[in-house]
Length: 113
Length: 229
Image (cartoon, rainbow over all chains, first blue to last red; front, side, top):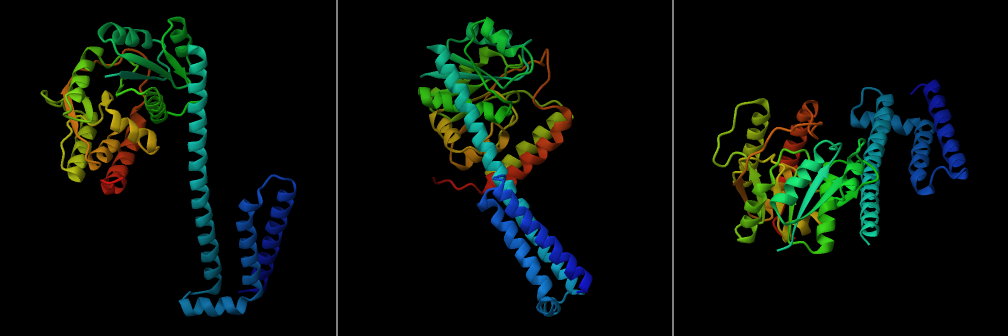
C-alpha cells in the first residue's frame, strides 16, 4: 500500500469516528446503531497502520495487490450493513402497519358505540 | 356460520355504492368495507351511505387491507371470511356457492374461479395465469385453474393462519403455502365483469414485477413450507 493511501484511510476513518461520536452526543444516533460504524473505522485505522500484516494476508490469499484486499473488506462491511438495514426497515414497516391497523380498528369501535 | 365479506377499496368512490348494494341485496352476510386511505371521496361516500367502513390512516396496499380484515374477523369470531373486490368486477350472487363449499367441509379455502367449466381465453394476462397454475402444479401437485382470482373464501383455520403469519398475502403464493399446510382448496365457477370505473390494483406496468415476485415466492419460499406447526 502506498503512503498516500494509508494517510487517506486514516483521515477518513478518523472523520467517520468523530462524526459518530458527535451525532451520538446530539442524540441523533443511538449508541447501539453506531457501534458498528466505530468498529468499521477502527478496523480501517488498524489496516492502514499495520499495512505489513495486510500485505502478508493479501499475498497468502492470492490477491494481485494488497489494496484490493482493503477494498474487499470495505465492500463486505458495507454489504452486511445494507442487509442489516434492510431487515430493520422491514421490521419498522411491519410495526407501522400494525399501528395503522390498530388505529383503524380503534376508530371503528368508537364509531360503532 | 358467521360470514364476513371484506371489501377492499382504494379510490373506488364511483364503484363502492354499487358493490355494497350488490352484497346487501343478494346476501344476508355481514360486510366490511376497508378504505385503504383513498385519495378520492371513498370515505365520504361510505359514511354518507352509512356503510360499515374501516378507514386506514395511511395507504399500505391490498395485503395490509386483507390482513386487517382477517384480524377483525378473528377478534369478532367469524367462521368464514370472503374477499370481495370493491371495483364492481365480482358479483355477490356467487358468494353463496363459496360459503356452501366451505360449510360442507369439503375444503378450507374456496375460490371463485372463472375457468372451472369454461376455457381460458388467450391473452397476455391469461398467459400469466397459466404460468402461475403451472408453478403451483409443479410445487404442490394440485391444479388451481384461476390462481389470480380475487374472490376467495377462507374458513376459520385459514383466518387464524393469516392472523398469526404476517408474511401471508391475498395472492397465489399464499395458496401454495396453504396447500403445503395440508389445507384443501376448491374452486366454484363464477363470472366476473370488466371494471367500470377507476384503476385496478394491478396496473399493466406492475404486472411483470408481480409475476417475478410470485415466481420467486412460490418456488423459493412457499415450496419449502413444512406441513407441521
